[in-house]
Length: 402
Image 1 (cartoon, rainbow, N blue to C red):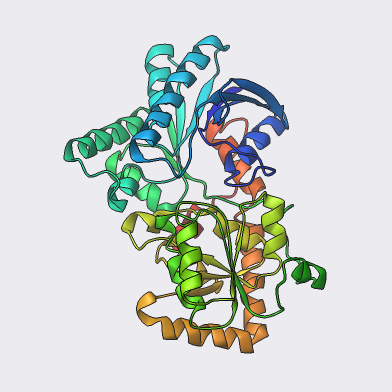
Image 2 (cartoon, rainbow, N blue to C red):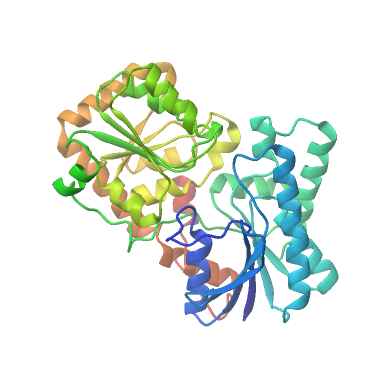
């Protein structure tokens, strides 16, 4: 079977960031599929590489979180245009596996189906255009209507749909009841993210102390609500580590300076191995988003990496992830309207290592059972070819009910 995997932001573990597509594509290759990844890089030339058996086409389309709205749209459409041109030149595949975001990647699938009669499977990572609309990036009424119509058309024309969370699946089914939707959440690479002790030499390397430590590793944008973590740090002298890059980084650093905080440390964006090393110094992971309905459906990579590392969870958003945290006793909910309660619960964990270790053990067990790359690969192979790859573990009911 020959697959064109369309992902505008494909990265490998060495690069860092969201490596879902790398692991799924690698798994496809290991099971005998011929996979060509069509993606972008910031260079001004086309490039081709073979990475762990994945044939990767790099198209010259620059993109950055710091770009304004219109520059981002230009980058999205530039990728669509160049991807179409490339696909027209390549030998015909059996399927396109198209992953969002942005929603515009779906235009490639629509074009391939209509012009080349190639079916596509559409993977929905976030609900677009709901996310940019609720954040306030898209305000024009006509544009909203156009994007909602486009979203529905992409869903309707897809052969199958892969949703990353129960909330996303529900939203898709409400718009296109006939859609064949499978839930394949994000996951962690258990070979990289493993439970490891707080080694004195690692603490010394990062100039950290052996005390209750909370880490955030991921994008640092407005929607990530990291001001809440810095505010929490001003209330209690635990260690708070923030690793990543984004438009709000300088603002957060200034907030820490304004509060004279010495217990908040900032670290540069790094590879998966660098994230893993710093996470060994932490007891808990902070999972945060602005409190908007669309973010309740998220499937954040940082959550699953933290599970694999055996970290307790501190989360500020009530959605399906919080339901997992609550039902599986993985951690705490941080309510900004009741910060004193969060402080009290953190104090209890600091004074009761057994309770903290129970949460950490539960986290690792959940990752091993449900949220690892082997399980996800088995599921996506079944979506691609149910006859050759029989149904893997059917945990949709479990995921839905947490």
